Length: 260
Image: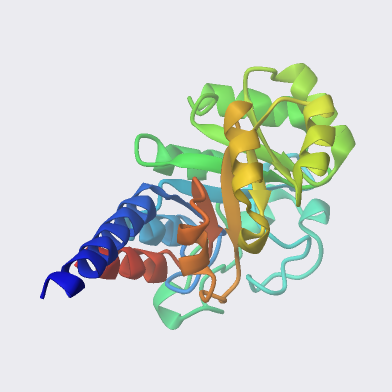
């Protein structure tokens, strides 16, 4: 009896530690809960919040007349009944498009959300991760984020390094997320800006990488986008601070099972 007691105690302790670690990981939801509602809409954002998300990603793109919309693709075909590039269409025409029927008849008539609308709907409910697409006017975005009260409730990522450099000059107080696969690449970004978050594949997270990040005030976000949920347990084992995912309902269920 005494022989089995210690392994059982250690097993329970490890399980408890794992459950606590999982509970402390903040969910950043990629395009909203896009398996539950049409991506990048207020509906998908609210669905994500219902399943424990703390952060909602928005994809920032500009219409022909300069209005900022939340749309992942450069073109309209995949997620609306429109055609062509958003950048070639005026906002009043974009506002008339149906952004829900492709997903389900339940969402017929849902429109393409503006960034202003997204921020108004999330105020006091969630923080925001801005994926800023090429062509976005940085001064206008910075002004809108400040106006809506999200300057200290957000972070930003730029695929275009020149846009990042412009942003850092205009908004040195706002937080930046960078992508890096190792400490060497992260050090490069530290020469460009002061990252607050780094996104990395979960299998590349090491204790050394995590300790380096934390010493420099950088939180580690594991990338688990798309429908592959198989890496969620790896994210927990690697002790990520945040996870960027598409399926908050699955991750929430995993955490609930760990806590039982």
